[in-house]
Image (cartoon, rainbow, N blue to C red; front, side):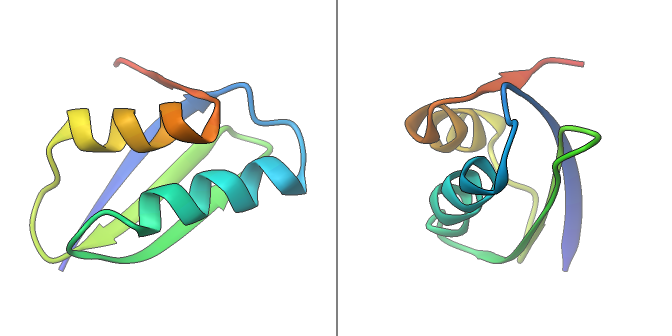
Length: 69
């Protein structure tokens, strides 16, 4: 199992958390998604490392922006 944390910009409420969680959870191989609203972080547990562009597309679909490190 691999845990990867991403920084997401624009989340401000519980609905934001639900939207991002649902979209990221739909990526094949993802087992769990934890969102820290206050810190703007999303931690994803998956079978193997995920392609960052898949995560970016999922976050974008939810209406938010993945911040590059």
